Image (tube, rainbow over all chains, first blue to last red; front, side):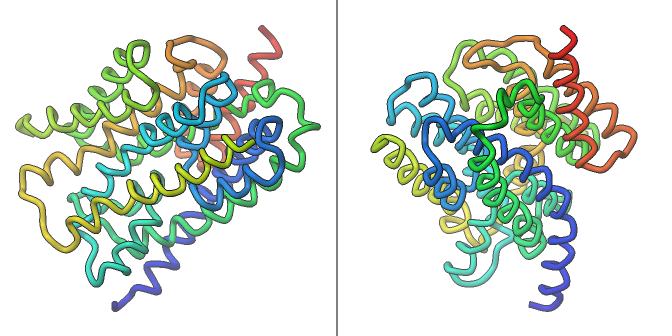
Length: 220
Length: 102
């Protein structure tokens, strides 16, 4: 495809700061996971799952004494947004199934949002490019986190748990431009506030999709 | 330890399935305009929910702790167009300092 290489390269450049941020977040994951999972399992998980919310969610359930089944369910629910993101992405993907599958596998929050052209379509090569530094940062960060985990003390004392809200705030401000998007964002935040105490983790994020449906019905 | 590996294998498969479902079921075909109106708003709604859950969520309850100060720093830094690394590491630093002080 014409310009594919240029768009991939542009995506990689866009993804570098995300990669550094993701590195910091996954150091936290490695640090937190090490006592429960040992040294190898967290790294394998980051290589194969490549999803902060699912990995942190499943880890939290296991650390709280939950069963493997509960941890899996939490991870699946936390990643249910990928279903909605994939539906949004699908019309922008062309070509054979293996090609569409390869692009789809590069879906992560920051890349998906960065590749959004603002009209409901996405740039797949750009998205894959933004994901590359994040994948490298995610896996390397986990390795570093596991290595230094036992010496770091309490990660929360270092404020590392604040990396996630800060990360999503940065993405949100980039995405929520225009009245209808701000309405959708406000609705999504409200739904999450109301549902977090009463439904299992992950569902409030999925339910926030209802705010997008409601906001789409407004005349902009 | 077996449970850990079961979780890893299951989430590797399930996450791939979640990423693939939309594109492999719908690839190439356009969505109706009403559906597109919704999907272009999904990122805003889901990201806002993630901000709330990651700032105030603690297990299945809401709480106000030092993360709020870190998140407030992040909002100010984003509005001042600071680079992402400044936004996230600054938020962590503010949160860590708040925990030291209070």
